[in-house]
Image 1: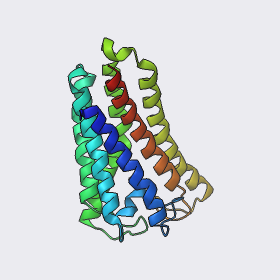
Image 2: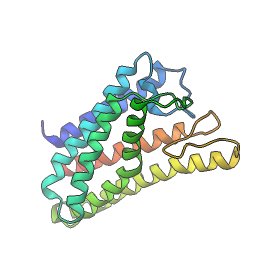
Image 3: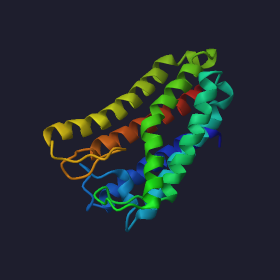
Image 4: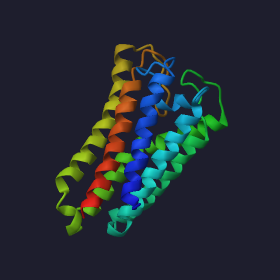
Length: 214
C-alpha cells in the first residue's frame, strides 16, 4: 500500500473512532468538552489510538509529498510536519486532564503543549506545503482543491478560537486559560474543536487523493 493510501486509511480510522466515541462516552457533552477528554476513563485507549492514527496519517502524507516540496517553504513545512507528527503521538501518550481540572500535572502539561502545536500550527504548515507544491507542475494542475483544503483548515482554526472569544463576550465571568482552550460549560468550544479537527483531516485526505492522481 502506497503512503498516500495509508494516509487516507489512517485519517478514516481517526474519524471513525472519534465518531464512535460520541456514542460510547455520552457523559462528555460535545458542546463544550474537548476531544482529548475522551482519553480519560473507559474507552480512553480508543482516543489514544485515534491520536496515533492521526499522527500516522500525517506521517504518511509527509512521506508522499516529501520529494515534491521545494525550498524554502517546502523545507520549512517538512520539518514542521515532523514536529506535528511528534506532537500527535505525544497527545496519545500523555493523557490530558479534564478541562475543569486546574491542578498542575506534568503529563497534562505535555499533552497541552502537544495539542497547542497541532491546533495552532497545522494550518501554517499546510499553507507552506501547498505553496511549495503549487510550484510543481504535477501538483499545480490541482491548485483549486489544494487551496480549498487549505482555506478550510484556516476556517476550522478561526471558528474554534472565535467560539472561545464569543463565549467570553456572552459570559464575561468565564475565566479563560492563557493557552489553548478554556474551561466550563459556558464556553461552547466542543463542536468547533471537532469541526477544526475534521477540517485538518480533510486537508490530509485532499493531499493524499491529489497525490494518487499524479
